[in-house]
Length: 493
Image (cartoon, rainbow, N blue to C red; front, side, top):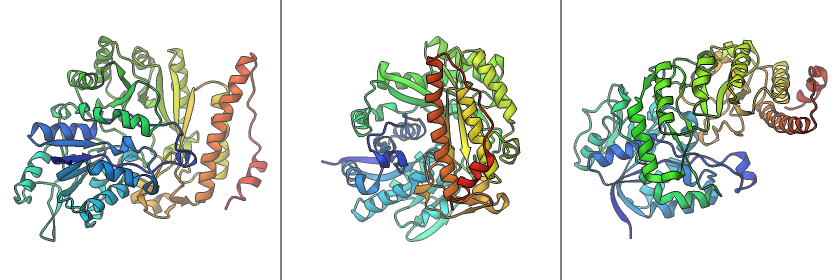
């Protein structure tokens, strides 16, 4: 028997990575995040009977040929009047590769006589609303942060009233396409309600089974701020990106309590989704004091080396064991091109400070940058090996540069000397995704090989480091053999 609901909010699945194509049992599952769950709460508070379908969490290793029939079973549990595909408003990696799967699900709903309207909201919807609305299954697209108007818009839809007075939406009416002006932007994020974590609880066992999770804890993320002051060319791409907004500690306290009310002692705060948590020092202190008062620990906190010093390291060390930096590259020329606002020397100083306060250090590294040459590739691989062997950091996570919609490299590829090979969004994956572009110096095959080499160097470096430590030995990292590397790397076409 289908459950009659006014709105079904769906967090669409994302394409499986290369690891999960090797084995479905490969470890990995995303934490429960808050963006869509806040929208669920808004709709419930407005009187809509609302349900949530977290396909992103249920099918983290998603393959349409293997799992679409399973998704249909979930869809058949409900008879919704409106279906909202809600992705994150800011994080590209929770958007781009989800969109084609959302369209396929929406098409199935329309073709299978689910008599519902279908809407989209999130970062991709904001960047490419016209692309989305052209799909036959899509009735409405929100441009920007939809929270302040979504309940009113959905009420008008159910009452079959006109939508033309609402800003920044695209919608269809009797086959005609309409677009309204303006831009949706939540100025005061303290007005947003707590996430409705209770909507996840019916799926917890299925999430564990589907993703081969053995841990009893339920990892979640929290967001204490929106936006970032920087304009890195591989990030952002939104009008509101540089509008840094904070959520007060009393509101974060309510968010935390909502999670514990839903999950109890199983709740584990994995990390904060903030683009730059350490940017506002007063906000940082307030949130850390809250965590201390509640006797909570965070697995990891992201920081920028420009906003990291001994004072901040000492504050962070009170509630977390790991700090993550976006290292991206060890070549200052390339960091400047990225508009990263840091030098490699700044990263090295931040590492020293973090270690002084017994913080473990995780670095994020981008491969295949515009203007990156074979010599740069080798220099980066050597420096990654050095950082691990000398035990300056705990781990490095390497990613393939991805020209996500709205970013400078996606909007102006010629300016940066890259050629985007296709816009099949389901392949826009950072972790193990095959490059969707080539550069003046590197082919897509070379970029992918480069990423595989970083994975090899990281894993082997960690193994060598452990063996050296167990024997109380050390290793001097020698410079690279340029001609040997070039002879091999240049053969990759």
